[in-house]
Image 1: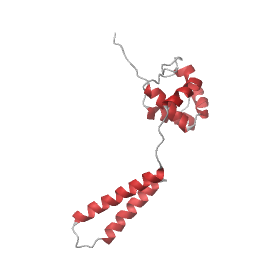
Image 2: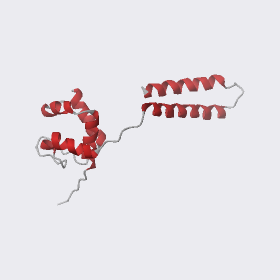
Image 3: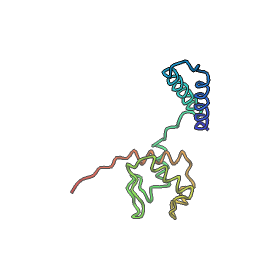
Image 4: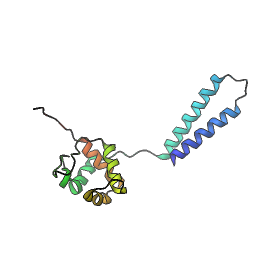
Length: 140
């Protein structure tokens, strides 16, 4: 909805500005006015969308302990040879994959079932937990 409001308000405002400026005005006046109008539209759209909720790594740890740890480990190091390590992964990537499993665009027998019980907040929290884990490597 905010995206639609932003696009609609931004294009409408620029058209209004262009139509109100007399033809004898220099172009240097038009551009700053258009930029200001678009900037205001973006700020209004962001306010309408509301503040983004920060993911809670602590809540993610609790969810991981009950849902994910058997395969992916509480520490993000997989306990099942068929499961990937998740420690230190990008949170956006983790959420994207969880949503893909939930929607069915990505399929795997266990994950396709388990992820159905996760809310969007759960997914963000699990991703926050796994991404917060630091991975170290020791070269041989």
